[in-house]
Length: 116
Image (cartoon, rainbow, N blue to C red; front, side, top):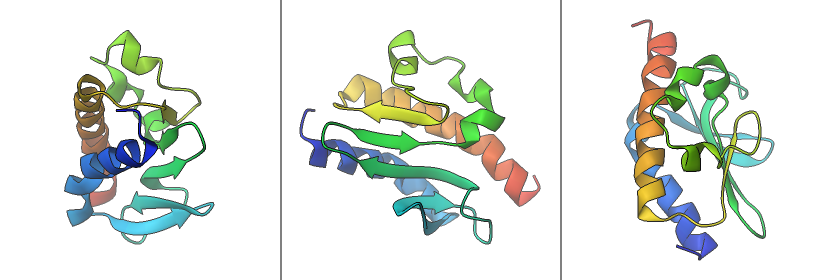
């Protein structure tokens, strides 16, 4: 996938399952999903598109870095910042890894907020 519209759309598709419990919000003008009633900096994921890539911000990975366990080195190289994962393209293999990462990250994020 090289079309940034398609990359962004695919990332939002992967975030769709979490919309049942999360609310739409923004952080620094970026659309994000967060636990209802939490502050803007306590988001699960935010997405920002630039001229050459789509970035997924997953700040919770700082708190639960074990969510990266099981990720390939190729996927880990997409981590371009403390909580930023950059996708100039998004092939299906990488999308599958991203989906698994989000599921692993959501479990502790949800447990923390829901009191599980």
